[in-house]
Every structure is written in structure tokens, then in C-alpha cells.
Image (cartoon, rainbow, N blue to C red; front, side):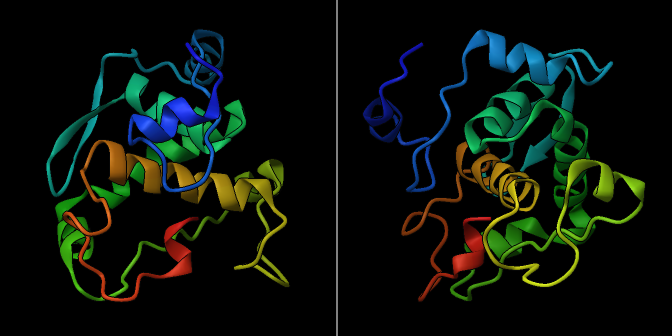
Length: 162
């Protein structure tokens, strides 16, 4: 597992920003936060319908910079986004700038340090940025939603990073 930042860009598995190398130890730390088996299928990610196993989601969460205790939320977010009623397929291939918006409520938001107040869509809160980024990396790496290939958004949108 290379820690060289350029390797991950060459592999085409980033969102344009550097990623945290998904070492076995980092992925195992994510997996330790769930009872779900690593090979369990969580969802098929549109539009390419890549198989999102628990382990593949852990890899993307590590790359996004998530703390291990964020991982159960990442699992829930991917399940919700891949529900056909949400129409992630439609958002992924449009020329519009549509992007999923995650709204997290309940005690978990305080426990994880999710910003739900001033500057909610701005920088400075790791949980906000990395949980959203994990979903975007899953959409890119498992769903195939890459700009100019499947994602044909005319202008893009900064919210697509997080």
C-alpha cells in the first residue's frame, strides 16, 4: 500500500483532492465499528451499479478522511442514497449540478461533532466534510460518476466535494 499521494491520482480513485491511503490497519479500524461482515453487500451504486460491500465502503471512508466512529453513518448514508426512490442514477448523469445532501439528526450528530449550526455548509468540521466526501468517493469509485464521463454537469457544484 503506497502512501505516495500521486499513486491515488494515477489510479483515478480521487475526487481531485488527495486521499488518505487505505491501509489494512485503517480499513480494519473502520470495520471494527460494525458487526456486519466485510463481504456483505450494502448496495449497488448507480449508475454503473458497482457492488458496495462493507469493506469497499470502509476503503472509501478511509480515503475520505473519516474517523472510524463515522463509519456506521457512512453505511446508512450509502444505503439511503442507493435506495431507488432517491434516484441517485438520475442525479449522477444529469447536466444539472444536483448532488446528494445529507441531513443527520439525533444524538449521533453531537457525538460525532457534526456541525448543525452557523456555517453548516462551510469548511471546518471534519464529520461534515468527510462523511459527505465518503459518499462522493463511493459514487465515483463504485458508481462510476466521474465528471465528463457519466456526470455531465455543465457547471459542477462545490457541494460535490463534500
